Image (cartoon, rainbow, N blue to C red; front, side):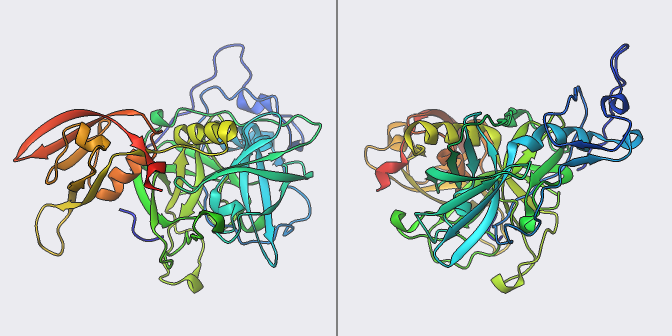
Length: 405
């Protein structure tokens, strides 16, 4: 992963009187927590992440490995959070002709809608007509159909049609996540279903840039999440950064908080290699799409088959603090505004340097693009910009990115 422009201590609160302890919440014998275990998490704290393109064999392990407790004396918040979220997480197998791959996802609804990444269901942009199978946490396999993709944010929705009820993931408010929060990732790295890892939130409001994962019938663009080799126009995504172990097959899987609630959808990892032949595993730098963005996009896909995105109507470049080769980007410089576009209507002019968008600091053109695109078409936003050394603020009603054709 190229071109992407403090750990806190925690305490587990002492249980209130008459409430069972964490130890008492688990059976005092070997226990398989493979369902919606009777666990009241309270204020337990959790940890880890995942995300990467899916290449591993779908049947690498023939049977699932549900949460196992062999010693109730030593259960942790990771065990508790994982037991709550695991029934909502699935392993996804995708094939098209001679190509195939696997990833992860999570149930959005009890009737079988599932959220994952676009690059999982399109096999990195190779197909627009995938054959999809889904394996649930208890080892059952179902056929699934594609509902819609959103290459702009790299999210997709698929659906199982079966006479059964599934366990939807509970969404947390990603705007309330803090750096240092403990997190747990659940997914299928290398095809190993029901794998959990733990870590912390390393950074927020990070922007990464990857090539588009649009299917061939959407301009034939491809995706490389490990090292960008494609000449396709890149996409910019706002993400949560984490240090937890992330590997191929975690893409689309759940990043959850201490309560087992979704705070992000794992999407990518950074690697130290400089070529696609050196696809090493996690180096402790992983990324997840925030749950608030994922929820908005998923809802629109379920309702209409696609999601909308905001358009500012301005050509922007990186504004730097000097002309030196080592200068830092300090904002998004407006090079040109579209006649009749949102920026022009808001009073933005060529030469202005945008430094904040909806109260978020903007240090580069990529950050501005990602911040705008995560908003729906027609959304209202505030912009702070510098003109002639003076900071100004304006309101803008975003256009529709579909107008770009």
